Amino acid sequence: MATKNFDYESFAQNLAAQAQELVPADFDDNQKQYVIQTLGNFSLLSGKALAEDPNLNFNEDQAITITQIIAEWSFHKSVDVIRSGIPQQYWDPIMQKIAYTIFEIAKQTFSQGLPHDKILELIEHHVKKSYLEAITELKNKGAIDEGLMEYAASQSNMDRMAQEMQQQQQAAEQNSTAIAGAENQSLTSPIGTETTFPKVDSKVLKLATVAMLFKKMNQDKVQTILNKFNPEDAQAVIKYMKFPDLPERIGTHNALRCLQEIKTNLPKTTDLTPNKVVLILRNIASKYTTTQLDTMLTRERVGVKRLVFNALEGDYYDKIPPKVASVVASHLKNSV
Image (cartoon, rainbow, N blue to C red; front, side, top):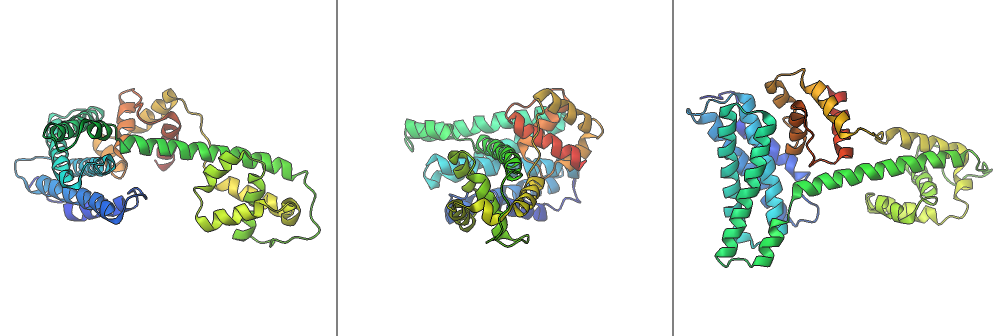
């Protein structure tokens, strides 16, 4: 048994548990369960094969990496299949074809000792190829029409998640800039003699301070940020924004305290260029062996691994936006 220490059952359960937090919120219960169960089943099957097949000579770290790659692509492509609108009776054959492809390509590339960035690049290429082959086969059989096939081919949950990460980073930067401006404005605001909001670190006071800040911002940006609040907090902020004397009610001292606390908790903006990202990641990665990097990146997504291992070869993985790559580089630098 090549990987006798690999507890593939617990690992598969852990991967499935992590997936529950990432399944799209707009999916119904059946769709959510399909994503989680598909990821869990393929992780378990691949882990079992890697651990028990005497013909496979992978160590524990390699087995973990291969299993995780299968889990991540199972997650992304099951989401793509569901979003594509392809009838559910065809989901399993598509996913089985993709999982088998990943397993075979991973076995071959790891056995050949290829660099990790090349392994991940080859796997991504063959995942996309097998997915397109599967939906083309459905179209040729008359199970779906050409329009549905083209729509299914356009789905990419991995790209969508990268875009969402970039949008969140941009929203955080806009919020941080607006807070800095509001702090300056608050310094010249009159101090109210009577305060409606409590002068303690209460949630009400913080929401009211955010409302004061939002009144000075572009309302489209405000709505974008409010969409990320829970509904009750969003309604409270909207209510406070309607107060004509909001700054006086809050008081300058309270506002400054709250703004400073919010500013402190916001992620710091970065201006790293792709070249700087590559230099930082290469400097970090060069201090470790491939096995150590595998272990460090066990819980990271495929895109993050591609970013790190490409950087080790001096290349930038352009599927991740520069702003997101900057955050990843800073996070890994601080973590290490």
